[in-house]
Length: 122
Picture 1 (cartoon, rainbow, N blue to C red):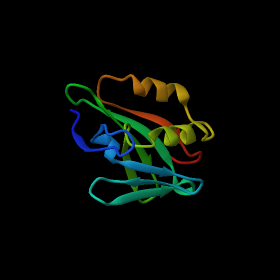
Picture 2 (picture 1 turned 120 degrees about the vertical axis):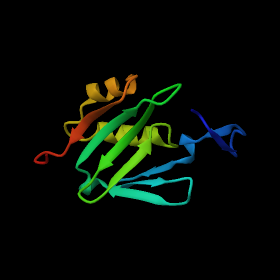
Picture 3 (picture 1 turned 135 degrees about the horizontal axis):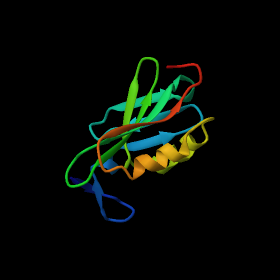
């Protein structure tokens, strides 16, 4: 279900619930600013696994990026602001499975897609 929040100052269009999550992606880390004012982050050097998780929500499935580190997991809605920046960077990870990623984006049922795992980790 799409829920809408405030309007975007640049377009005047309503912002979806997912777009209220704002990503910052740089050479050191990924930060996710949440609508409640909290922030989660994970550094690239601590990133161990990247999953795309699809949950069965109605009327459409909900898709999230799940970034796992040694002591934290960051969950980011697919529709977050600047999610394309994250996707571009994920595709640059050595061994990132683009085919699995593409399959996850068209999934209609609950599933977890492991797109990347740091070599030497389980």
